[in-house]
Length: 425
Image 1 (cartoon, rainbow, N blue to C red):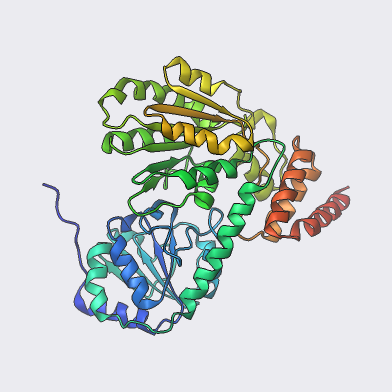
Image 2 (cartoon, rainbow, N blue to C red):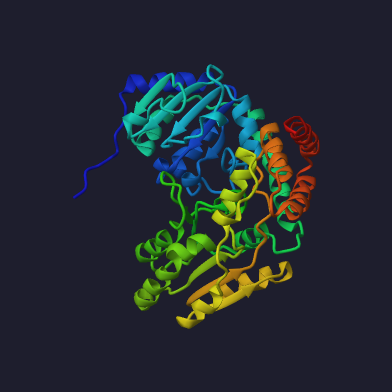
């Protein structure tokens, strides 16, 4: 029998934590994978403190998406309301998370911080915490709540909720923006609209993680995961297969890029074929983003290094993925037009078996962060000015995305990039 992990900090430490939270006016709960099983406790603490809630990517399933002050993720894959909350908060409660991107956390000294975790080595690792509580999130919050004073001032929380309404409208607009090729955001947006109860969604570490963070909203009872620490390609497929073994009665949806699918996904389909007859519900859907490019790295080269795309490292050999699925006796759907996205998902969810959606998506839709930094824009401009082979398509598609977002910085950044080019010459 496994040992209990329901560890609770000493009572005097809980009282210190409560005093910090009770004094806070702008409280943020940062919820990670370590808070699994503590959904009700997290929501109750947010209610008592008037907090807004941010979830790490692996903590996405902990807080239902219909909680209006749950602003989803933070950082490059996150939302603008999450970023604004972090910039303005005075109190931060970290719950079972080792969120690694310190540049997106509050400035040192801005917020009083408490961390709850079962791993002592993670205490204060990402942000200078005032108090560290070694304990299980569920048990610790249960013991903490009697010492919390219910706030009557919900202005902060209500403001967070209003910001999230605006963000969701923007995400819908981004998904509905038309490009020369299929918009990958639309594929995820329409998937989200159709997710059945109890479904499990996995994503890869490429741009599927961007679209998963921006567009997938897990309701209560749903699950989702990706490779958090490793943050590398191909995990989506074995994760999805493992999920199906663990929960054979649930529908499982794997979202994966074509490069990762070639690395492991195609072989994993053989594993699925071998074992699917033993599953109570054989429904298993694989979405392959077919753009013949290692897209996430292509954009990182442009936006972080200011370097143009190098075909030699980024090209992915085109394969008929739907045809390969059909060879194994599965349903294959070839998706090329935005008008067909909804119907493709309807067909997949109507099929009681394995379906592969081969989505021929654009590789030039920018995975825009919640806030376009000047560095991001300037580096993209530099890459284009150095002769990116996709220059024309990147400019057109990025412009469409930015117009939708209402950002004007790239125009100025292009002038800066041109000036730097002239200096180099």
